[in-house]
Image 1 (tube, rainbow, N blue to C red):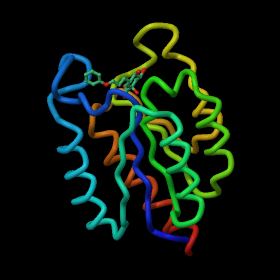
Image 2 (tube, protein in one colour):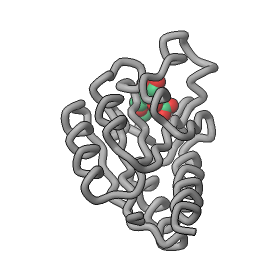
Image 3 (cartoon, rainbow, N blue to C red):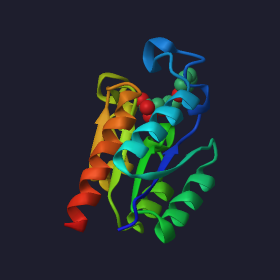
Length: 149
Ligand code: CA2
């Protein structure tokens, strides 16, 4: 299976590190991308790292991943709780999908407790801060290694 991993980020995550550090920490999305790239090299993964505030762009990247990628790591942000379109796109992707949330959504408002994406995700990480992205990449590397063996 391809060792290319799409790391996708939903709406408002471009503000990471710039607002609400009590909830989301002080690292920016550029810091997260840099850390993901360094870890990916260690794990022999290639990554495509994207963020969008537009649902259709995330759907289009998942379609692209169908053709080229072995796994998807996704923080769908607010679309987690609303988007059947992203769920449908992920259901059409064959490799591992890991859902990441920086905050512990279960400790927050009730509307954040339901995730459409969790109906497809092979694993869900929440509340580990931006460290969750690295944990997701480690899991994906293991799953891709296991699929090869
Ligand atoms: O905890 C997460 O990673 C979330 O996916 C973040 C989403 C939220 O809607 C989900 O319920 C949980 C919000 C992303 C907004 O990110 C910001 C970061 C800094 C400042 C403002 C927004």
